[in-house]
Amino acid sequence: MRGAGCVVNDLWDQRIDKLVDRTKDRPLASGALTTQQAVLFLGSQLLLGLGVLLQFNWFAVGIGLCSMPFVIFYPSFKRFFNWPQLILGMTFNWGAFMGFAVLNGELPLNLVLPLYLGGVAWTLHYDTIYAHQDKEDDVKVGVKSTALTLGDETKKWLVAFSVLTHSLITFAGYQNELSAPFYVGMGLAGLHLWWQISTLNINSPIDCAAKFRSNKTFGFIIFVSFLCGKMF
Image 1 (tube, helix red, strand yellow):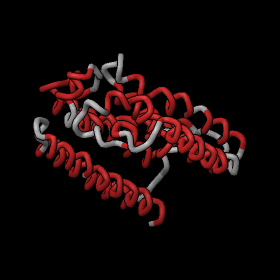
Image 2 (cartoon, helix red, strand yellow):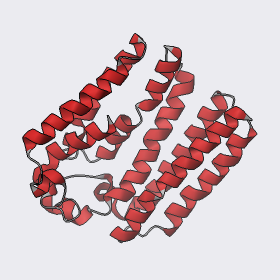
Image 3 (cartoon, helix red, strand yellow):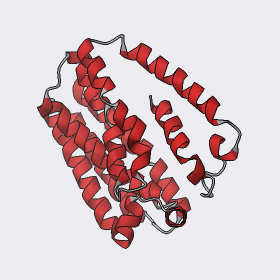
Image 4 (cartoon, one colour):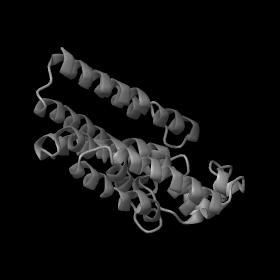
């Protein structure tokens, strides 16, 4: 489904991608693939996703299907909404709902909402950094982003996003009664976010790309923290 979301995004944006230096070589923008080929590929991905989804309980199936409007329409928001990264976060982090639905056949909101909202805040953090790579091209082609909306105030907002991310994910761990190793890991995760923001140069596309990619380290720390907090 993550791959399907990328195809949908490229279908929506193929005209824009041709005009942006970083994206002009994407398959549709460059003409390496046709729209028809992309739609067929998308259909195969959706069928595979549906095959996986139907292995779960019917409550989880319903929760999974509820994500489809976000997957389909997210790319359009950058055309009229100054905070498209918020919609992206709501889409990307749907797995928090899915995980609980699959395992429990229900959604205990006191457990799932902190995790979901923490993920949304994290997406706002890393995708705002990502968007600073393209801000000059975005102005030219007329699309919107948090990078353009927040401008020189970006770092202050990144602090707010990271505090929300860390606080909500930590609270999710607390609600799930995780043990001490979880909190040690969250301390390291907080330091990593602080490093990202304190060393970020929002006017350097190369540095923005590097800081964006470093979020895989943050995600790995979170994963290990949850795992150790559950096991020990």
